[in-house]
Length: 318
Image (cartoon, rainbow, N blue to C red; front, side, top):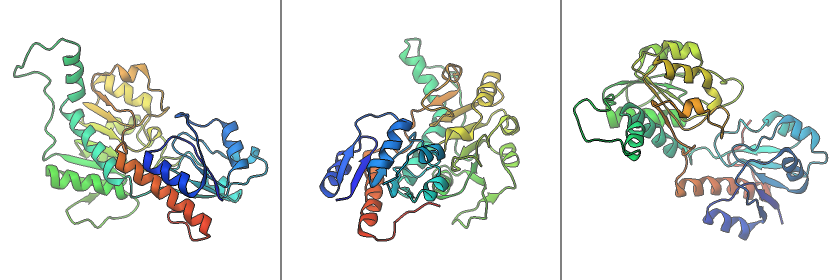
């Protein structure tokens, strides 16, 4: 029977299926695997189901010795924690779970946009601290979202889902930067680069993949290009934003606010960022709905089942 390691606890539905269909070991630790654990996993299992934080780097593959593993069935659409080139050179295929995460992640983007614009987390902290003295006309004045201009960096599945919500739900004008034109069912405008996009919009939403090509794509120059009333929203990967530059922009009032679900050195979140009143901070909740996480797990297991049957993998990455 195919020997499978799942690196984090999963929903009951996913764990039940995994135990019924495979010779599975489910790691009970909720933190990322150590390099030693990853090397052992590559040596001892036919398939590993890793997730965010399990850094399968080139050195892990190089130091693993005799690699038994033939598939990393990643739990998550993002796979920048896996060196895919090194994996494939070692004879290990990599899959991910696209599609299952799209709507949930787009919903979190809208949550952050609304919370940041309307100063919701700031207001909640004020109330919970016991400082609230009652309603008055100029308290916690934020910004309207409806009818504003949103810019989306990255127009894949998630970016398009965000754009639809912005257009149909809030009557927003949508602009974007992507590698190619997108044919959507409502008006959009493609801009030439991130700086041009940033300068034009009220909200800049990041929806690009992580990795070396997008690291610090949003840096001090892009933040400076944003209007002072603008908000930055990141539901992609933390390293896409230069976190130090973002903290400086928030502290100086260079931008009006930021809504973040991911962080450059996750799970470490700098005290200076936590102290920014105009920062709305969520603990990576993008796909945190039971049916979504179960769907992701089922898709990962579908790839495991395909591997075992000698069938084509459903969602290979390259």
